[in-house]
Amino acid sequence: MLRSGIEPLYERYLKWQVKHVPRHVAVIQDGNRRYAREQGLDTAVGHRLGADATEQVLDWACELGVQHVTLYTFSTENFRRDSAELESLFRLFREKFAAILKDERVHRNHIRVQMIGDRSLLPADLLATIDAAEEATRDYSDYFINIALAYGGRNEIVHAARSILGEVRQGVIDPAAIDPEAVEAHLNRGAPIPPVDLIIRTGNDYRTSNFLPWLANGHESAVYFCAPFWPAFRKIDLLRAMRVYDQRMRLKERVARGS
Image (cartoon, rainbow, N blue to C red; front, side, top):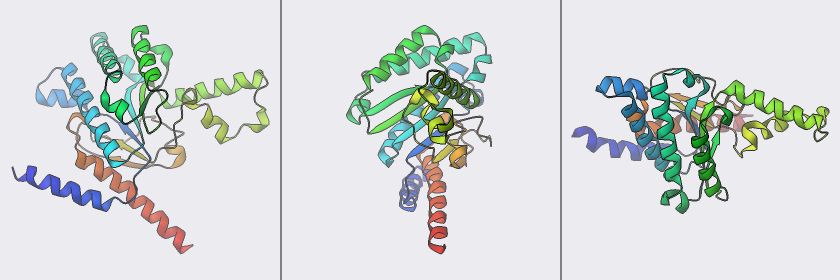
């Protein structure tokens, strides 16, 4: 009871502290399975609760003015899980991408949804649903949700290198003109994704797990690790993460003024 009364006050205090809002927040959604085990629930229920948390966090991000959100939903390493869990996950992904077509929040807020990752690894029916969601939101540009599925950071750079080499062979690109901007333009099939300002990882694990190495690590994004498993992630946790980014930006401003 006391906590429910204090949390709204603490949220307002955190909002007051955050003067710099990150443009692009990337989230490693960790802990669905561990949360389910702790609660005595089936793994599939844990993933579904995690998906519910994702929708809530996206609402908060939009409300707080975060324009780009990238979600680490399923890595290339996750394919090692047992077939029953994979089938359940792919069914959940299909359901959530299909729901985008009729989600009034997506169309009211002009949210573009796009997948990043290795499409060749996904089942055809899931890929068709993803394609439909991307097509339905292709012309939106107020907010962006990037879903990292079958994603691996090194794999992302390998695919960009192959794309660049293909254009070199075709005479489209001069090898001498290849620079960081050219590489960035070939990441994620050319999807319009800016550098990451802030990475959030839930589940009390202190690593970034090969997530967006070029756009995050290469641009020295701020990182916030927190203990709650993803289904238990709160608005307070998001605001605390944004406060870490704000503190970093304030330090940069002080250094710039000092120089």
